[in-house]
Length: 330
Picture 1 (cartoon, rainbow, N blue to C red):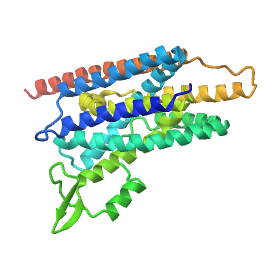
Picture 2 (tube, helix red, strand yellow):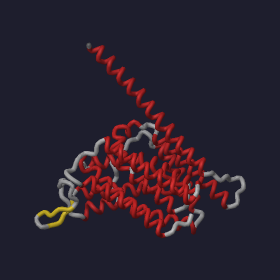
Picture 3 (cartoon, rainbow, N blue to C red):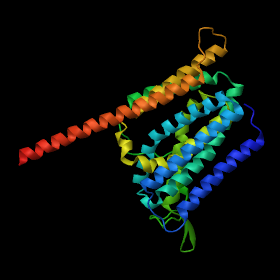
């Protein structure tokens, strides 16, 4: 799909306007906690935006491009849910006040979006020049899927600091405590950053590391840089509100890693099969985008449903045990 420059400018400009409006809403007045009602509204708003964008693609670029966008968007959004738990650990580790968590996520993810844009540009150029990279991406996704299954149930108690975060903590003079919502303050005439900026860097750079999984995954669905970028952008834009909306529910998605592993494994096999097909291997199939979209959607529905059923059953069992113990004590 050939996208004119003006379309790129219009889409990126529109996304920036929406994010700026979101940031203005967060910053106006006194800082306050993000309510479930607000989170629900904004999640619905960003999902609606993504759907409308997909419909616009369908009208102007055809069903195939729209299908690739929706498949990529669902994949990125699904993988992002797993990342929210790491964001929670970062927030807890840095003891970020709840009233400032939305701003931290907004700025941190905006940083990640800019860095992902560069990553996508490099990836698209590399894939167009070196077709053998499809095999590398496919094998990497299969490896990641296996790792997700192997690590299931092993909660990360802490997040390892990446090189950028270690550099920032070492080089940037910073205060020990938060100073409201400020990221830079003057202390005895010296400019210093606050822990809020450090957390933003942590969120942004950690999310970029997550892109090492998600970018190859979406390139397995489409090689169109415009679709890859917009699917990532819409998934990231709705991620902050999803963080507050899910809350404790995130801990109840027991089978999430299995579902994500299946999706990554499926896309990995799809990448390798289509690379073989392009190389002239007749028995290697081409997987249509409608099938990819169906597999991704059904997997997430089944995974979420099974997780919630398990959580409800575990809750009943826990309540029964508590009731029995109370009866014995009585």
